[in-house]
Length: 463
Image (cartoon, rainbow, N blue to C red):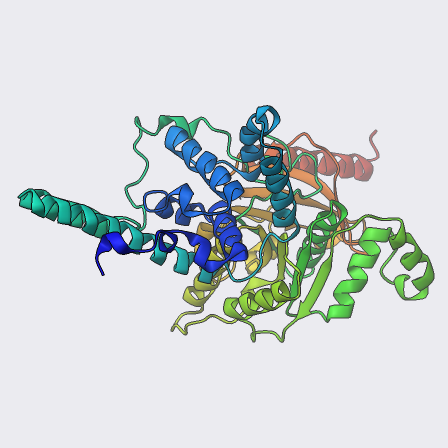
């Protein structure tokens, strides 16, 4: 059988069925690196479903013009005018219905297989078309062109590693990036100057503090606020039990002291009926038993049951088990943090975790990056590092300091006075006027001088 005798249907995705074709487009939206591979090897008309061919055509054309792919929201805006003015009402209804289904099930769980199978199909099609052209060239004695044609056919569909051409791809730098961040609930931290809305997708946030200062309470506060705005949360705990963590969420969400929660079952459950919250899964693993792969397996199991997280809370990374054994603990810890950030990027969602400060950090006025115990490399991996500091004398009244130690999204090196309510796992910033470290040290020095002067006047009897 000659190449010209190939059934035209073999050149379409029709042979894989409707669901598979829809998952191909879903993969293009969710994995832009893979989409960059596909754009040079896949044609929109490979889809025999008209609405998928239409969406893919607009998706690829945007990349061709701006050198970046549109987000779901931007893609909807792009096709909106065409759908409004276009005469094809059936196409319009098909696109709307498909987008609704895709939003309802953002991660069907088997996109990895779909991407591998569809990329292989497209590469075979490109090679087949090249062979057809090569036969024609040989017939016309264009032998030298055949070599170049086949080289190009072999290279299409490879990972796009050419990089950002500064001048040719300039348009991509001026398209606003939709980080789709998860807010912390602290307005000044979520502001445009600092986190620009919160911890973004694919980012790793770390809170650093000494023992007993409030790391776990910070993590519960982050998870609770995510629930309040309708996001799904997975909270991993390696020290506390699942029910103990659940009680802390109860106290935060309902404004009840954690010690009173067990006696207020009916009131709390009734209050939840009036609240529009996301879903929360709390999973406990023994200290030092869980690796990042353990968490990945658990998340995949949840996805099979229809639960797709929007944010992951890990309490805390320092007591996870590394996937490799090193002679030095700091190397193992650095690997754990690298794997966590890779997980955040792979799942395209934010991850909050915590790190223990070293001995010097327990007495420091402000905990900095240098106080991250065992491995400074942890700070190098993280996108955002916050620190909490409280002296023993401050614990009774809940006062403390929040320091933005590192921030890839915006401003860092700023300090805020806070109140930590450990009974309800709530964090409140008392004054949104931030200080730098030098300003804080100068202020503390002045306060100390005022206190000494006051004591001296009391001793000498002067006023």
